[in-house]
Length: 177
View 1 (tube, one colour):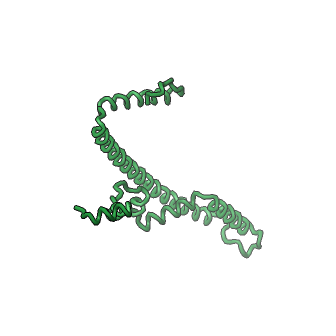
View 2 (view 1 turned 60 degrees about the vertical axis):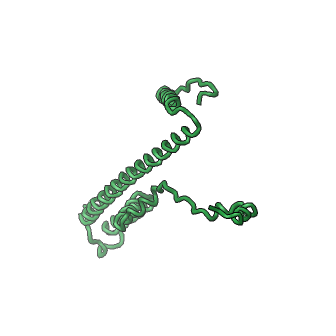
View 3 (view 1 turned 90 degrees about the horizontal axis):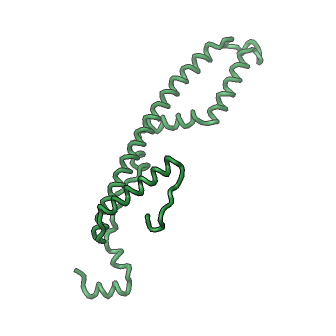
């Protein structure tokens, strides 16, 4: 209970009561923060490797590497520099091993992307459910009929689905939504 002195302070400084109360903690979790906390160093390394392997610098690096390897082993820089004659067996083996590891990194990253999508879906569901519960409670306080509102929502959803499937919007009354 506040004293008359507190009331006088609040009249002089209207924000005093607001500042003295603890701020409510956000209950909705950020998907990026949650997912980052779940990531191990190996996961982050796999994502870095995969993101580099899917970039143009990776393509350019390989184009230079293959061109240099082939030119070197075709004797362009002298026969003494040749170490992997045509059909370039060593190059083939190295590229095959690289492909094996890169495909594994891609699969690891895909699994992580799936896990992230599942987390996002769970958080979206939690947020939507939280919003629906709050909306129902607010509607009750305002004296709204939840069944009538739900019928209106179902009609609006059916109309929206029809518009999406046909590609043609249906005419609506201005007050319908």
